[in-house]
Image 1 (cartoon, rainbow, N blue to C red):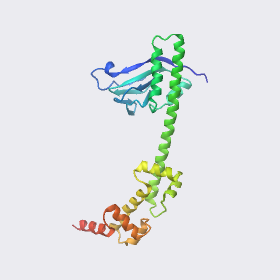
Image 2 (spheres, one colour; image 1 turned 120 degrees about the horizontal axis):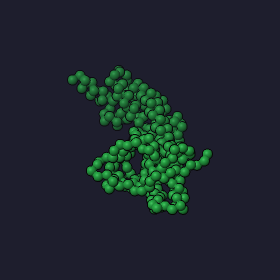
Image 3 (cartoon, helix red, strand yellow; image 1 turned 30 degrees about the horizontal axis):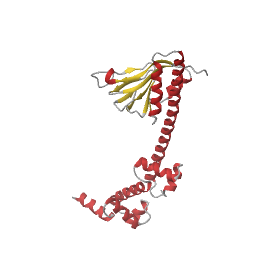
Image 4 (tube, rainbow, N blue to C red; image 1 turned 135 degrees about the vertical axis):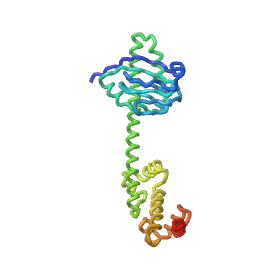
Length: 268
């Protein structure tokens, strides 16, 4: 497929302190072209359709034709406005997320600075250089957005795996819920599963499992006449003695003390 070069509409630096006075937010408007922006400093908040993002130099904003956007000020950025209506570049630019966290501010700033330098009063050789810089910008942005999308897919996959693990734990407290077994169920290595689970829940798998077992035991203590040995078994504890130890560590009192206190409070 032929690569159709974009029409460069405008390149420059936008500073709300100079362009917009006595306003805290810009008017909501419908974009008519691709608007690629690199924030120069932290400032306000960007709104594109239903997406919202705090403005930070560690990202690139890519608004597409037909989107509604406005910005909470202050806002200062490098910008380039491009007209592309079809072809491979159009498809690639359309696929880029509205906000791309890059961690490559200096690289993007270098491209935008060169674009600004060669845009004003461009001669024919400069036009060739401008197009090469535009293609470099788009190529870099496409690659970074692919990494971002891949990372987001991994995060969603991890979240789903942890969600399934939590559901399984709650429904199978008497099963083997060791790190090795649960990691295998999720399709992760034990080390990766441990890291993902703790990042998602703030607890290790062992801490979470024990918390759920104690929680169920607390309910059984006040809703059944089961012995402590039976409750320990039904909640998946390895022994009555460990059940009592884990319960007191979590609740601050032994199972019998807890039940006695609850019944006393209820009776009052």
